[in-house]
Image 1 (spheres, rainbow, N blue to C red):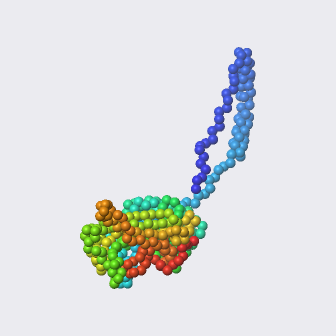
Image 2 (image 1 turned 120 degrees about the vertical axis):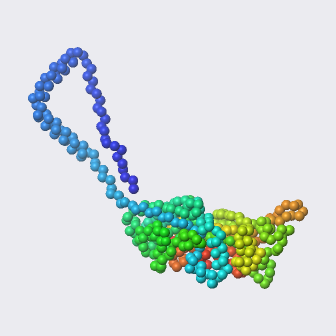
Image 3 (image 1 turned 135 degrees about the horizontal axis):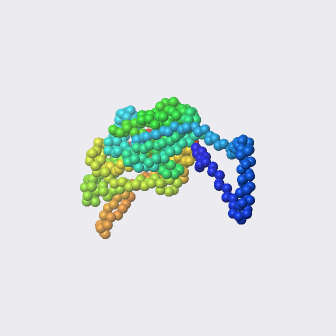
Length: 411
């Protein structure tokens, strides 16, 4: 709070000098008058001194009465909080991953491949990110820029009265420089003090209290990295195969295509991912074949048990989940024309002219998912859905999500 500041002591202006210019007669007259007056001053000096003292005292009293005494309001000191996090892409806790290996080995191997080959902070370096904490009557927003490895530090000074406030809180980490912000992390707490919440956010290994009074571990191990996963920042590999066999959902690609052997003709195949929000392209990215990952996996053999598949990526995207200035969190499924569009194109040589022709060979458009609250607290939603030829079904491209939800916003 800004208090009034006095610029300096009040200094009265110097009065105008008396005009003492005059004739010689006037001067002599004044000298005689001043000399006579001096005798009276000597005679009445004690009384004049007393009167002068009284007048001076009255002047001080009058001055004090006319100029009000400014007493600045008593300020409530605030406490400084430094919240430092190592941000990572969406990932499952190790305990869940170990169970997933038994329930869905293909999905487990796909997630493990990302953790083994992609830095945990992929897509989160040098980003303008906001930390938002709000309750019934308190709203805290702080902005910072992450470093090249996803580390970020926010600073906030919170008043003591606010710190003692108790209630449910919503914690959001958002991306962007203006509202609505893209939500990377969202959590609704149970009843706790703001002091307790900020203390856990500030502590490495801190936990959040859920609405069901269960605790959520904010920090997880992603590969060999210890950090805080962002559920709405997803990283994955896309695999391209053939759908020509009626006996199996996905088949190997041909050994040769257009005179080039596998996998080298993959350089003529590109994948593009678009995000369209309310009729406008929010983001788009192009990806080429990743021959390094292909060699590591036997071009799909160690993941799917099928070889001669082409991996693309790693792909990354922020889900279409947004927070508005009034605190409303909504999926773009609430809006009009909002969807993801995945397109695969092939370039081949036109034998008549010797130039390359681009032809789409795959296109899949899907609306963003609604919003789900995992255990009543962890917010997720706005995700990409793709058609999975291996399982012959549509799947949500996110580690944690309840695909059955239809809600599109939280207030």
